[in-house]
Length: 312
Length: 248
Image 1: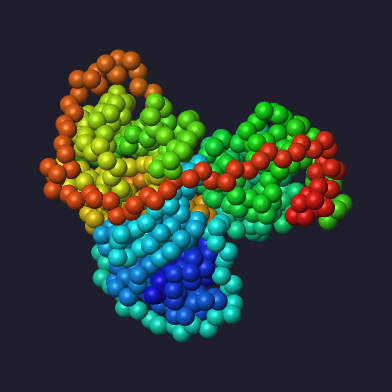
Image 2: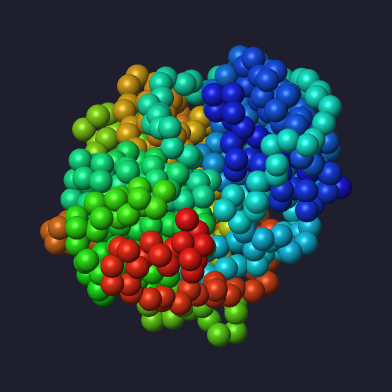
């Protein structure tokens, strides 16, 4: 059996979530990957180097310059014949494209799997992770998105796959890219960082997120936020951790001024170690935290920054 | 311009889901059910577009008879008419998308706005699948929508921030959290909604096969975390993270 993984890449770099999807695919059989874009020789080379990949399919054409769902789904469908499983990481692109391709193939997709039981059977969270459903698919092909936090990323090096250019299927122009506003940060990517420090409504405003920065710097951490903090405009949407934001499972998650609504817990409760800093001793976040400090975050944060700098 | 908005009746988002002891699912007996929050945002967006060229809003739900309540809520918010496709068994996103595609053929809307995901099965698939079946453009995870002649400009929430795409109409849009703040229906509007038309049909009337492709073998509780310890000082915290948890 051979599985095909749609690789998501941005600015020439393959996303770590896509390498997690490669790991999942490798449990199902031989792994081929698809890279689509414009002028993507270097991305295809990088894909060929991912451990466990035996072939790279390269679709290099202007209509893939931006990852629009309509042409990408048509491309997947044109290649689907040779594969039993088609996977993608649960990235914005994976979630946008895979279900569309599934409908075109008359397949019920299986979203956001966290475990593979066998070639037909998968475990996926439902109800914001408050329950885990084990589902068996009767479709002849399986279209799957993979929750990156639950599968280690395949090593970026060690593979030596061959690269094959694929034909570009006809696809009507239904949508076009207008613009993007992407956050620029020197910090690690939130979805794959080893340490995440998040702020919530307790931060009171966007300016106060600066108090988190030295702590994140000392820990080499990504900065996240609760939905409340994003809704209040303290930080941009791509900071959001939770059921509908990013799902993270770092070694260390520090929740600052976050009460711990179930929608937030859904995004971070698989973290190895959770620290909560909140002045409300009754906040639900303490029920999942390994270490808690009940105190005013405006006192704790400067102290913590100093302690970590000294220790660092 | 006509807009179709599908809505789903789900366990209220404030209720903590409880897994049934026999592992067959989540207990929905005697718990509060509401409109899926993302669908509420979709209904609200359609209503806000009424000043901008939208003339009729049709809401549709696929589910048990009680989904009438959900449709009435949408009518009370400001939708004009409702269609209930009655199914006492669960219909998967693929089946839902097939039913909706049939309704779209009949109703001929210019735009379908859906919630980006239902908070029960968390599939995040129906809108994309409907777009695929219809061969329409799609703008998922929308945080801003603007309509102009034959076009919808949609700002989408993506991993790295925001992305704006232009869609040729007819199109599918799926609503993310920050698209708008849904209104509460006022009492007079709730009364008025009772008189708005609601049509009931069966999936078989549409000639659609909705037999499920996924069998749920078991539903289980996720492993629970135990509350840890409260520490008294920052120094103690740093010490524990270094020497006990060994994560820094």
